[in-house]
Image 1 (cartoon, rainbow, N blue to C red):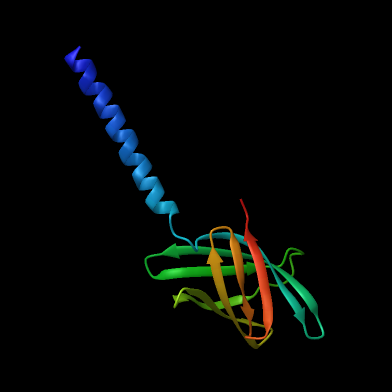
Image 2 (cartoon, rainbow, N blue to C red; image 1 turned 45 degrees about the vertical axis):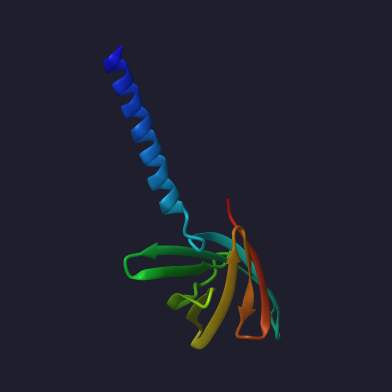
Length: 123
């Protein structure tokens, strides 16, 4: 019976430890995939994008995809600055800048300081 208690305690300990590790991995508030819309861009209208944010030893990495599979946007840098997730990128030789506020599953922000962005995390 004493051996059984030790085995049961060990199982509970391993389970608790593994849940704690998993929670720490998933606790980064920025990492994830998002559907987002940039509203009322001059001469274009609304722009729909898929944003993917990951993290490695060097910091954050981002990538964009158009849902229609058009050409991609080249991301130059991704960083957190004063609680905002900032992305600098280029598209067809234009330099682009986004400032995003990510709160749980909701994404809000601005594109080029002029156009509103809204989005949500993809489950």
